[in-house]
Length: 354
Image (cartoon, rainbow, N blue to C red; front, top):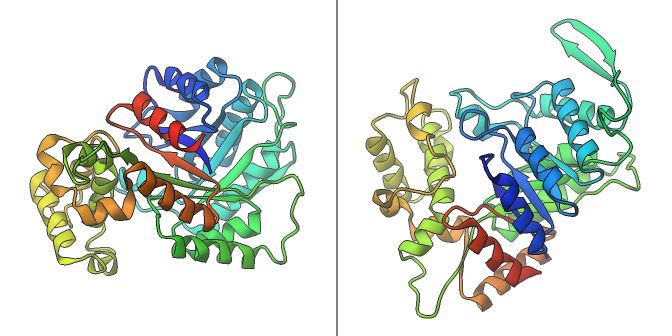
């Protein structure tokens, strides 16, 4: 299985990209979460100039964040800096929208957005709509400004069959966050395959599958649920608890799927952040430092059950066995989101998989 890394845009991000390339990692991704992290297009421009081989990904953008012309211009501009190395993840904007206190967009709008990006980034014209006004658009500036000759890889963010079906119709890959259940991946691939049956496919298009998680390789006799393991995986656990807290009133079925201990952790998180599941400004309390290193006082919220569900923690043999199972489920690349010591975590991933 290939290996890659996902980070937030920040000063010095290009140094991490250089290190990832030196370690032999396949891809380097930057989140698109505007009110939490810096801008991924700015960050990846620096990474493009500092590297020569590693693939560079947006993980992930959305029509709820950017218009198709603006996103296509950014992607084709990156493709001019790093020809053929750009990956664009697209999604409904679940996290990026919720950090604004808004809801994600629809899969129908996502599909139209993806189609427009694919057309524009390949140098074709596309239909662009604003309200009741529709126009055909295409790149008017050519030459060194943008690169529409080298292909850009597109991947669809999916946790369920609707987004996976869009991936099938648009002939894209898949990317999912914290989805370590092989059965769920088989379902995603089945949904994509079924939707793709009547869809013409460009022979050169890629449909790879990417899994975003965190990884903690245990030292000898280390507690798998000790402070070090909780610190390495807590950002994923807190992201799920924040989502559950944020959507408790809107999506009661989701929180009802959690066990009693997990529901209690959601309640404690709301209390600790000084908000409620119905407060209109709860996003300003739940999402600061989203996917950042957790505070020591929040370690008690990092439940072993959620660590095991969302992250890879274990001995070398344990991790290799779980990764082999995921590979059999059709995952092509494991992406880690490191927080405690990114260079060391990237080196451990490289040691395991490259």
